[in-house]
Length: 213
Image (cartoon, rainbow, N blue to C red; front, side, top):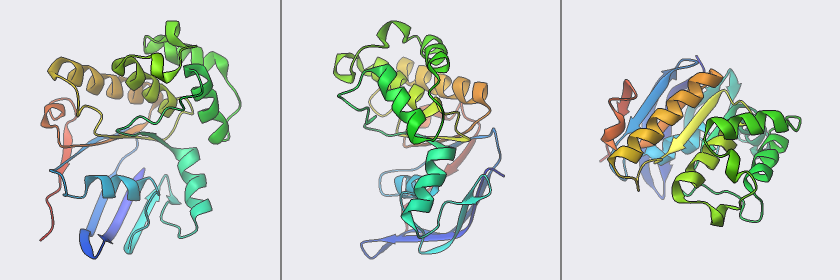
């Protein structure tokens, strides 16, 4: 199993968000995490990515403890194992697209690989935008740049948080297919957290979360 959660619980501001959740996701599998606002999708994503630690239970990614209480350990596992596409994209505004990807490689402890960057940007239709800064990109181009940044270090796990929330039907489907295509090309596991049921036909396995009482 690439991801293994065992009896995980998490409370925020005195309210229990996740309660004794156990979940396994295989290497190369796609999982859609569905649920309304307040159901715990983002909390669960942040737990899997090591941005939060559980109050109880354990979480392992590729056999490594992503729930280690020491932030430096969690940061190291995340850099080496996980690519994240945040809802707000979070590209570094002062850097062009290529420099954003080079930075991602460096932070993951990978050698600078411009050939891989060029090939990835070409596959995503961004070769002609390699020297553009984020503010010069359209929303769709920025999304693809964020996907490229998350994939450039060949992570074991790609996590996308609400990647289609602001998109119409055709663009939502295109982004969903792009995530699947790129993770499959890299042999990565895909975890998508969303309230957008339009992705359900594309990603066969889904887990629906509901707000806890």
